[in-house]
Image 1 (cartoon, helix red, strand yellow):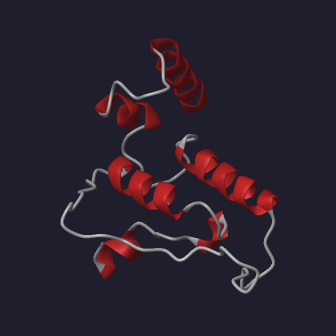
Image 2 (image 1 turned 120 degrees about the vertical axis):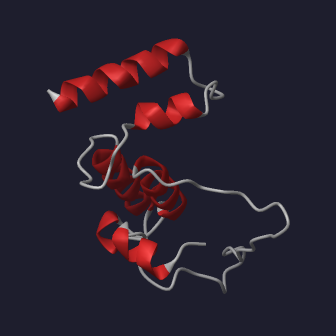
Length: 120
């Protein structure tokens, strides 16, 4: 949940990023990387009815390439430090939750090096 003011301020759910597979990444990363915080409420639940049979299709044309394009757009924006409201690099977020399953010290070092190259 986010206020309307914060939703507009962070340009959440930016349709120019793509429309499939990005909302969780975009909302959480834009919030954290702009200096905000994400909280969890364990006393609630969220439901999503997925297309599990032939009658439940996408209401618009969609391909697997759309998901890849969306994730690339989010990565280019946030990992590339191109978002004007971004105060912290992605490595800051990774370090905040360190250790991160599936990440090695070398992975984090490589990310930091890539970020430094992009800032130069």
